[in-house]
Image: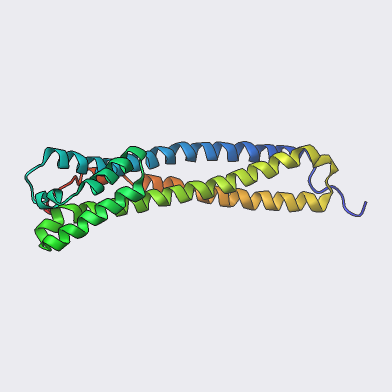
Length: 209
C-alpha cells in the first residue's frame, strides 16, 4: 500500500454517526423554536385582520370611523375570507388599501399615528420578521438534512472507501456541519431578538408618547 490508512474505520463510523445524530437534534431544536415564533407572529397578523372586522361590526366612534363607513362589502368579504384562511398576503393588501384611504381623507400626523397607517407599518414589519425566520428555518433544514443524509449513506460503505474518499467525505460533511451550526445559531439568535410582545404592546390604535 502506498498510503497507510489515515483514518481507521471505527473512527469514521463514530464520526459519521455522531454527525447524523447531532444534525438531527439541531434541526429538531431549531424547528420547534422557530415554529413557535412563526406561529405567534402569524397569529398576531391574522389578529390585525380580525380586529378590523370587529371594529367594523361594532361601528366604533373613533378617528377611523369615516374609513369604516367607506369599507364596502367586497373589501369586508375579502378580509373575512383572508382571516378565515390565514392568508397574510390578502390581509396585508386590505390593510394597505385602508391605509391609503385614510391618507386620502386626512394626512394629519395624529391620524397617521393612530389609524390604519400605523397598523400597516406594524403589519409590514412583523411580516418581514416572520419571513426572515421562515427563510432561516428552511436554509438550516437544508444544511442539517444534507449532512444527515450524506452521513447515513456513508456509514454502510465505510470499509469499502479508500483514503482519498475518506478524506473527501470527512471534509464535505465537516463543512456542511459548520454551515449547519452557523445557520442554526443565526436562527436561534434571530428568534430570540424578535419579540412578539414588542408588537403586541404597541397595540392599535395607539398614541405616540
